[in-house]
Amino acid sequence: MKKLSLILLMIAFVLFANQSFSQGKAKFGHIDSQKLLSEMPETATARKAVDDYTKQLEDQLKTMQTELQKKYDDYVAKQATYSDLIKKTKEDELNSLQQRIQSFQQTAQQDIQKKQEELLQPVIDKAKAAIKEVAKAKGYTYIFDTSTGGLAYWPENSDDILPLVKAKLEAKKNKK
Image 1 (cartoon, rainbow, N blue to C red):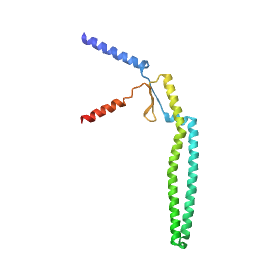
Image 2 (image 1 turned 135 degrees about the vertical axis):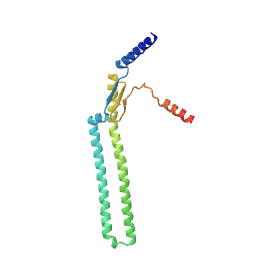
Image 3 (image 1 turned 90 degrees about the vertical axis):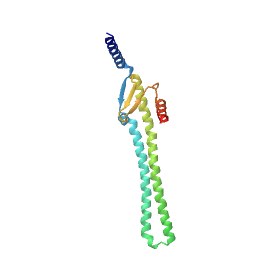
Image 4 (image 1 turned 120 degrees about the vertical axis):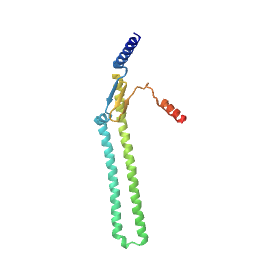
């Protein structure tokens, strides 16, 4: 009889817990944020601006490379007529121009990345805000981002267990 009461109590508990969960205590959703971003018109505008900026830098790089090629061709054609001092000066000039081109390429890559981040960040922020608004309005507890495998939304009052995990790891470290 005691066992039967215990079994009935456990069944009642499981049913109650299941009912509480299904009544919205925890509601999960998902979104592909990359697809969302790709379908936002602001993303196309930002990408166009980045592409235009990239084209400007590529055009400048081509101009510099053309200048280097002309100077190199001129040097090779007239090399036999140059004195040692002029040869040395021309070679130094070619090396300097080559170094400026390499420096420009590196700086251009960094600038393109900064420009992309600068133009896309407001779009990303807008998407995050919309996800947050929808999640709150529809009562979602967590929204998973299927494109990254992370969370796109979580309640602000949720527990961050980082300090607890760090303490646990530190305790394990100290036991050794």
